[in-house]
Image (cartoon, rainbow, N blue to C red; front, side, top):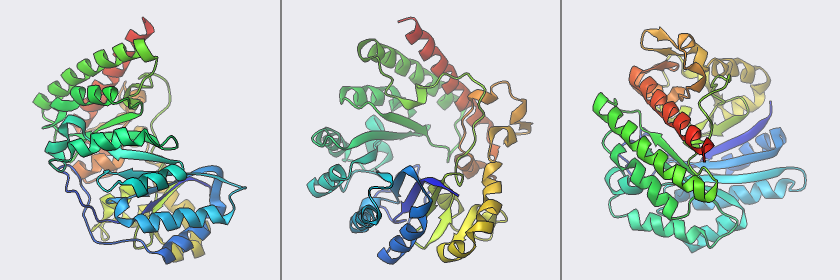
Length: 356
């Protein structure tokens, strides 16, 4: 058992109530005792180069706990392992003190910012604050800023304009996500396709100038022979504020309040204390369930995905799909359409930059 990425879900609480967020908000916060016990167990299992992430809820509600965790890990044996740190935040609580801490510890900051859709899908009036945070981050050379933007059927019309805004702000790490907690009907799919065409035009123009591809969704061509497989549990894990271990934070979000579900024990590694005592037998047993979360084991509607000619270009998070189907590995038909639309746009983009 080796771990290259470990996430502390420091709280289930959040100061935002985004329209697309499936998380159940609870005032649960990690404590220093759990941090130390988790760190003591995880540290020997970390690869020589690994990442420790902080997630929520809104993790900056637990800034003191994050700072204590970083300091504790750095004190253990800084010469033997190279540990990088990351945090996913809505940015609303960032200030000089926090920016300086993130800078001093060379954090990757994944800023959740929905661009032109921000005031619609998140907290109205915070758009200018997010723009200011992006500009302010440039003052700190050790902060690696990434943007994560979420769009719904109602806000997808802002996608291309948002990408344009991010390019104007000089951001070179951008990822967009489509919310799957509500169905994308045909009208929204057509609008998404139109927005991707506009986005491709923007990114081709950007490529001519900068020779870079800032939107990660379009970086890899939609060809090849590698099947998508969920990496949760394989070399990564996450701990919750109440000490449960999961293959990644997404499974904690999905299974919250589903303790009686038949597949719950198949994906939860259990309480930390129990896992520490029994991990040599418990880990491979639970990992076998995560290992089956591959595209060739998925089902779309009444069809099996291994029969699909586009299987190698398909990338569907099984947890995101399960919010609709209530079954891990089962994908709604409209999610399949979304992935095909994106794959076509990705292929078109690479074709056009190949001609530049």
